[in-house]
Amino acid sequence: MIPTSFDESNAIIDKPKDMTREQCEPLNIWRGPFMIDNENFAASIISCWKLTKEELAEINRTGRIYLIVIGPGMPPVILSGHKPAFPSEE
Image 1 (spheres, rainbow, N blue to C red):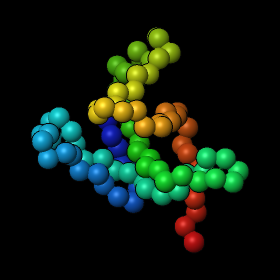
Image 2: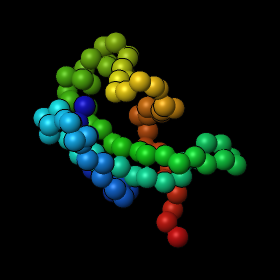
Image 3: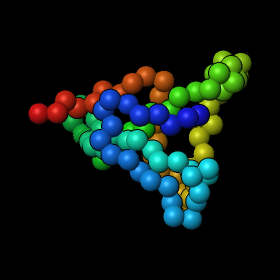
Image 4: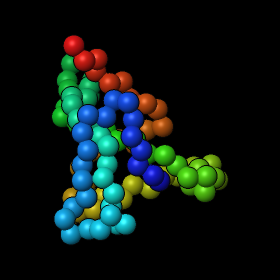
């Protein structure tokens, strides 16, 4: 998958100091409150990724997507094929 910019992005996360640009490239993100349910919000980061033709073919074939988190723990995450509802800026 290829990280991609998107209209709502409001920040960029740079690569860790111990990684090269080939290993990890800067990531455009949206940082703000994400609605968990009708009453609760949580601090969140949203990024946007573009599938290669090969990845899309493999996902269509298997119906599977793998999430890899680098680090010792597993934070709460959401994978979605739909654009999230971004809070309107007032």
